Structure formats: structure tokens, C-alpha cells
Length: 263
Image 1 (cartoon, rainbow, N blue to C red):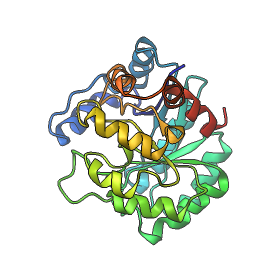
Image 2: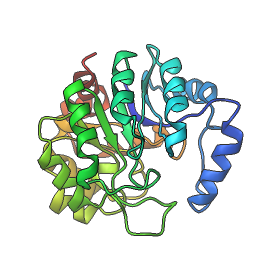
Image 3: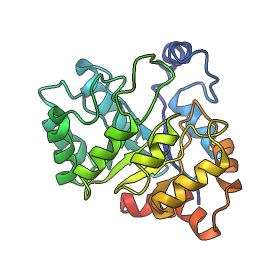
């Protein structure tokens, strides 16, 4: 079984406007779907992905309700849809209750697009609420091609948050710090929590990826692609090429996700 723990898609009618704009913001990055939920689900099946986690992001306070309505509508057996809350929303805690009550298993936080520092104490009540509700939290971690400013979730801050919430269900994307993997080895690898493999194909050496996975523990690493910005087939081939045992790969490709999600 293959579970992609890190994918993005939008309503079919909105994707043609959203995807080109995001791709341009990230320097003209390639895309592997048209960004719509229908095309994404079909291509995931073609890539051999059995189930994928759909990560939705409320990039402003006004979007929060509509983003979560979409997330709830997409939540099916094959699509494990996560909600989102904006840290500046006065109703964020109540919205987390609604997300959990609707049967969603987690939420996505993106410090860059939501404009907050990952270790800012003002957002800790949201983390604590997610912890108490049993919601999985997925964070963008490290740099983002769409932003030139210093990252809002650098590895040192990521490690600080993981140490502050050791029993929470936290997933730090991009092996714990996109494009900042030397710092990941020092500050994130080996901490509590999970990391995923998204946006790593062609961007990190096999040797360093293996070191990070081994140090962090393969039982706390999740397969993820960051589709549509990376192909799950490419990510799979990269992770499969690493010097890991078959058991470690099985955990990364699906077993860890099933355990974390309680499926």
C-alpha cells in the first residue's frame, strides 16, 4: 500500500486560476496535475497511490469556513481530507471543534502563507487544542520557494515546537525543513513527532536523506510528495532507492500513516 501524506488540490472550478498564480510565485515551478480535485484523484490512482491526505490551507481569516466546508465535502475513503484554521481568526478554536466533529483527522498550518512564526507562543493554544482533540497537525517547515524572506519555520524553531508538544500528533513537512537539511540534522532529526518526504526529489542527496531518516527513526517518517508540485512517482522512486530496509520502507510508505491516523 502507498499513502501520500502530503498533497494539495482545489475545487475544479477554481484550480485554473489558483495553480498558475502559485506556480509563478514559486519561480515558475512545474506542476503534475491541473490542481483540481478530480484530476488529482485520477492521477493519484495512476501513480499507484492508494490513499492521499488532502492538505487544505486557510490563507486568510475570511477563507476559513469555506476551506473547511470543501475539506469536509472531499473526505472519503481514498481522500483523507484535513481542515485548516487561520491563527488570526477569533473563531479558530471553535472551528477546530467543528473540524473534529465533522470527522476530519487533522489540520494543515502554513507559517508562510498564514504569516506567523511557528514557535510564536500566541499560536500555542491552537496546538494545544489540536492535541486535546487528537487532531494531526501538518506544518510547512523550512524555506518556501514563493517567499524571499527568512523562513517562518526554520529547523531550530521546528525543534523547539516539537520539544514543547512531545505527545501531540505533529508532522513537519519536507523532512523537517525544506532546503535547510543541514540544520534539520542538528535541530529536528531525533525529536518527537513526524517528518514527511515531500518536495525532496532532486533537492537533497540520497546520503543526507538517509542520514536524516535514520537519525529521526523510520517509524516516524511519512511518505509525501507535495503534489501537484512534485510527482508521487518520482518521490517514491527516490525513497525506494535509499539504503533502508524493506521494513523501514514499508513503514514510510503506509504503515506509519495508518498508525498515526488510527485507520
